Length: 219
Image (tube, rainbow, N blue to C red; front, top):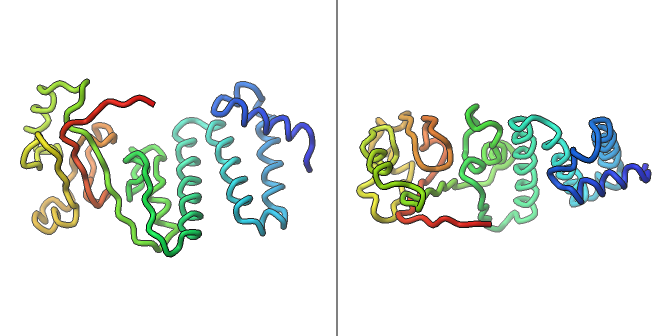
């Protein structure tokens, strides 16, 4: 089972990361995935939860970059949810904070999200109580004040719901719907990395945090 060819292809993936498919062919990738499936199916791996989880994640990485982007996102986020569930079970009696991009922690799986559905998939796998918080800056160095002022005036924009845009604000979805029931099924646009698509933010997130003065960061 542990052929030199298999080891060499694993080395390629580890060395080249997301660009491994420039170094090996489609047939090589198929061979690699088939070998990983055989290893995962062995009794020793099935009985070792950590190794099982690692190999599933490694296979998902390979498949993610072997498929078109939207399908790759779905493969990745499904595995992210599975990994999170694995950790949640190991930390059964502890509270967990998961820091991720807003799209990934959304409670819903909508078509416009293009497979970025970790939060929704995790909810399908767990009975844990979860609280999903989205963060967005209002003012940014690259964002003109005139643009922000225009957004505030639009009734379908989340900024229109804020008392002011100078400081930090938070909207708790349950309280907002309780006080304004008519907003329960209302769709908005907002500055939460979800594009200009209108959707129901209060179903996707439990809280929306607006940061008055955002900072541009580099990684």
